[in-house]
Image 1 (cartoon, rainbow, N blue to C red):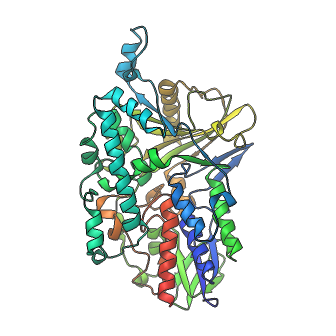
Image 2 (image 1 turned 90 degrees about the vertical axis):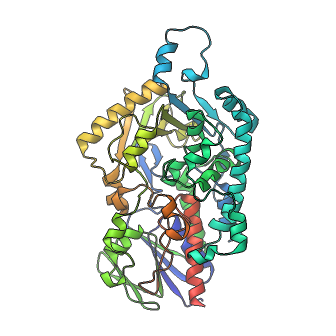
Image 3 (image 1 turned 120 degrees about the horizontal axis):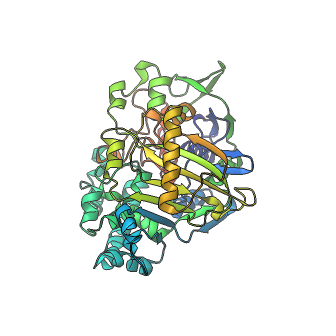
Length: 509
């Protein structure tokens, strides 16, 4: 296949992975990225000695990265060093009433009174933590993790690493047998409630749904597998941040001859297999046998293709459930942030109103759950001496208005909330600040509705119900990335790149 050519539109993880697989098969591959750096949503912001991962910041599922690099006779350690985080993350609960009560008491305060929980990879230790909230919850955690591990092993082998684009691909005895008990039809909330009654324990095992772009009530119980990812497989930090992983995958492509063109915007995709044309903003035409789009699926279809080459109409895209957008504040601050771990989560007593404000009645949440990332706790290269690097992320509904006045007011509320619930007062220590939200996701990444992730992992948008890798309206056009299978998140996008490349190679034989 040394005479075959491919143009990849978009340099996110899905596009970079697709390029690696195709180049390894002998194809001449060009990746075109509209921004000045590769990585898509995994961009890097550098300012005044601070370096921020603008998007993904959790390195989960290390086995997926090992498998990806092994395909090319490489391993992650050839490109970057990993450190397992301890704790994996810290959780603060906004126990407003309990905190008020504790101010009137003396002596050791029970965990109910707002003490943070450090989540580690020591299951015995975590059993004790769970038991301190609810009698019997320690044993329930071990049972839950055993089921989670089974879901992970079966799910990855039969539903993630194996691409199943059609419903009839599931009418297979091996698939049916292994799918038994995975909870494909029940929600995460229903499943988790069978193990734990305490709302805080339910939050601890469901927080990762944010990474899937869903809520406890609209995400299939299959994704209980994320607890195995979290507690058993571990949470890691790649030296240099997720930007170092982008560089690693890009370097792997360069070793195989991939050409990267950054700062080049694609304005149209036309043609047919063997004679595809990718038009750039300056008028240049790139010709290739196939095109693989890693741009948002909806953007590609609605903005880059002629109407007759679109698989879905505008009504289809408007009817989809999109994963949250985010309000992000990147902060360089003087001094340390002792109360925070590398990853810190802050949960309200009742997070249902926040999820409702994302999926049901879009609005800026009154009492948000949010995430704080402080990589300078682990990596002293991301901030100048004597300073800390952190960002705050609040999941919000896609499509919200995020004008300057709204952002400013919410930023102040968020900093107040951080000080109240973690004890870290950042307000008078900030030396660098940047914000990123709905309109920025839309303008920088052509993100539909300004979503930070793409299509949510709801029951109606899982497996064969997600858009396909192959276009059935334009022969020679393929898709990769978080809109298609297996879904959103860096590991899933690497696997999506493999699936897309496999489709291209199979069709070329």
